[in-house]
Each structure stands twice: as structure tokens, then as C-alpha cells.
Length: 419
Image: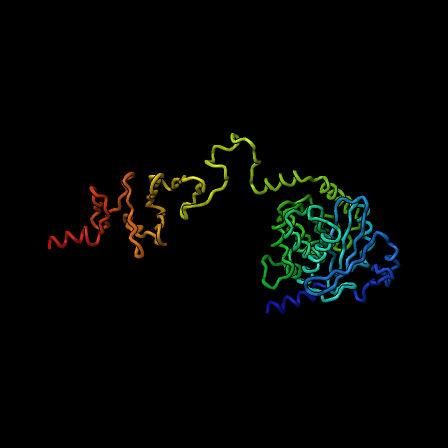
């Protein structure tokens, strides 16, 4: 049922232009060129344009445009909306390449333009992964020098790839969606058959996120962009274009102005600055070369703590034998040098047996061990820890410190003697 609904949602999500606005042809020298079929765009005469055919892992061949800028330091990977192809976006790509001073890679989804296959959510994920791999292998673009740009439905594959790249330079979300179902119905939960669950993936993005949205968007409500911006781990100053719709934000002067400022700030981010932000987000402190810089609150160099007590949930240091006290006003741990045995009548936390997976029982009365697999008996001559009989509260032999079974040697033996 969910698969059928997901396919139905995909039919409403993708509207590829028919026929395609361009065609891909091969020259005599073997180079691929794009020829416009309906618009007067000299695609074949652009020397800075590379037309690529990229194979995806789902067996489709997709078309990609790579536009070079000799002054560029960063590369922009553009994922377009659901009702356009590369032929219609060529003018916009040229403007972005010049104004933002970036190299730009745009691609058509499977089933769009001259790309083969059918459009679907899984195909778009495979498409953007193949394009990113092409940027790495063919043009030597690393994720540190890459900015992902997703418009409308393109925000789905954009966040899908951004969640997998921890050192990405930045992400731009243009009229983005929270999820496919949330566009049709104003729901606050995610169903299994929903598509493009950006609401779950935005939290995994570890780079600055710029959100651009029009306040009068009648296709994707402004609340989608506002929700994504609030859930981002490193949100950049958003751009809410007053009176902007869904497909006309590029004509507003604030659009290119704000986008230029974002690109310039991403260019100025150094590796040291990014590492500092990562440390701050993870709560780590800067390492020091001197041993005196180590905080006195820690007993070892490894700044790592593991929880030990499931009831108190107090951490202990994995490097030493330090044990915390119970916060419920119970007795502190005893004998940290030999066999450490805590006594806590409130949280009832008891250590395991050293030989089997046995746990002590009887939380109501005094603690009595019962181990059916081995004969583990605690003996400690330093801290004088001795279990008592639950019936007569009689301790074990004080002279030999031997364990006396409370069934046969204590109360049971006295009853036999009395009998």
C-alpha cells in the first residue's frame, strides 16, 4: 500500500517538460554539445560549457552541464525544480556563474530533458550521487570546495547528499519543502510512504545552510522554509523575499545580493575556522601541549566518561577505578582498591558475578547472593564486607571469614538442633 501511494505521490511531484527544450549531439571530434530545440540559445557555441553524459547506479544516463569560471574558488552543484530542464535554466546558470564567481554544475534528473529513465525519488538520489562522483573524478572537486543548491523538489536530493558529506562547504535551499506529503496536506508527522523527508535529513547537515523563500509562495508555503531554517544545525541568515512566489525569486535584487554575500563568506572560511566550529558543536576543548593545561576535574588524559549505574546514571572514568556516589543519599562505595561493592538500598544497583551473567537479587531485605552456575562467594578481609542471613540477620563466621549458607548452616542447623 505504501509503495503504491509513494508512486502516486511521485506522479504529482514530477512534471518534466515535454518535449525537451534541448538535444545532445556529438561532434566529429567526439565532443558532446547541446543544441536548443525551441529557444534561441547558442549552447553549442559556448566554449566554457561541458556537456556530459553520466551513468548512474540505477542504469540511467543523465545529462549534466558544467560551466567554468576562471576566477572561481568554489563549485555550485545545482538541483532544479520539478517542472524545468537544463535548456530552460541555461541563462540562469550563466548569470550565477558570472555574478557569484563560481563553477556551476547542473544536471537533469532521470526522465528530464535528454536523460533516460523515469523520474522518481530513488532515481534523483542516484542522479546526484553520480554527478558528485563525476565532479570528484573528472574535475577534482572535493567536498570542502562544494556548495549544494536545491530548488523546490531539488532540495530532496540536495539534503540527501549533504547529509552524507560532513566537510561540505555550504547548502542553499531555494523554496525548499519539508516533505512531499506536507506540501499536499498540512500534517505535522511523517508517514512511511512520504517522499523527500527533508525534515529528518536537515538535522544531519553539518555545514552552513542558507534558506531562501518567498512570503507569497502559493505552491510551497513559507512555513516549509522557516521550519527547515529552524531545524538546521548551523543556520545562515535567511532571505525571506516579501511578495515573492515560487518561481520568480531570481528577479528580485535581494536574491543575487544575499546569495553573493553567502558565497563570499563561504570562500573566506578557512580550515581552522571550520575545525573550531566543529569542536564547539561537539563540545570538545582545544588540545594543549603541556600537561598542566589538562583540567583538574579529570583524573586522566582521555576526556571520556561512561555511565555505570543504570539507576543513578552517574558516569565513571574508564581510565581509573573512580566510582561516583549515589545522588539519593545512600551509602558511598566501599573499598576501591580490592573488591569494590556498593550498597544502595534505594537504587538497588548490584554488581554482576565475575564468572557468569548472574545478578544479585532480593532488593527488599539485606542483599543475599544466589548463583546457580558457579560458587562465587565474596571474601574481603580489608573492608569486612559480609552478607547477612535474610531470616536471622546472622553474619558469617568471624574467625575464618567463610561463607555459611543460610539454608543449611545458619537457621536450618539451629532448627535441626532444637528438634
